[in-house]
Image 1 (spheres, one colour):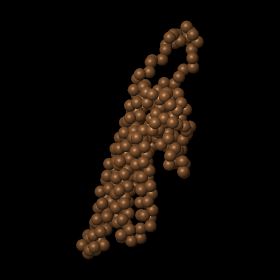
Image 2 (spheres, one colour):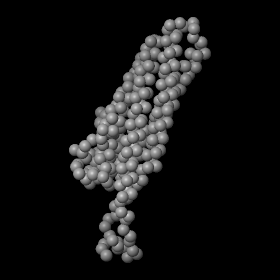
Image 3 (cartoon, helix red, strand yellow):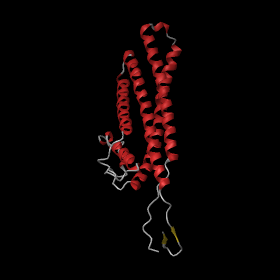
Image 4 (tube, one colour):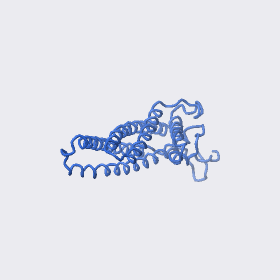
Length: 238
C-alpha cells in the first residue's frame, strides 16, 4: 500500500462530438451546393437580361431577387452552426491532447477559440493548434516537441483550402457591395460559384481531420489501463 497520487483526469470521449461536427459539415456542404445552383441560375438570368431583356419573364426576375439573398442568409446561419460545433469538438480534442502529450501545447487554451477571431494571428494560430492536437494524439507523441514535430499533410491541405475559400468569400462580398451594373452582378455570382466550391473542398478536408484525430484519441483512450481501485482508508491498491 502507498499514499494515493494526485488523480490524473481521464481522457474524455470525442466520437460523439466528432460525428456531430461531421454532420454539420455535411449540411454546410449541401448548402454550398445549393448556393452554387442559385448562383448559376442568377448568372444565366442576368446574361439573358443583357442579351435580350424582352425575352425574360418579370416573375422570374422577382423570384431570383428573392431567392438569391435568401440563400445567402441561410448559408450564413448554417455556417455559424457548423463553426460552433467544430469549436466544441476542437475544445474537447485539445483537452485530451494536453493529457496525451508530454510536451506543452504552443498556445494556451483560450486561443483555441480566440485564435480564429483575433486579426492577423487568425491566419496561422488555428493551424498550429490543430497541428499540436494532431501530433499529441499520435502514438509517438513523446518523440519530439510539438514545435518541431512533423506536420500533417492533411491538416496543411485543409488549412490552405480554408484560407482560399475565406479570402474568396471576402472578395465576393466586396464585389457584391460594389456591383452597380448587370455585368458586375453576373461576375460576382460566377465568382461565388468558385468560392462555394472551395468551401465544399474545405468541409471534406475538415471532416477527414476531425475523424482522424478522433480515431487516434479514441484508440489511445481504449488502450489506457483502468484507474487503480481505492479502499475505504484512502489508499490505492496497485
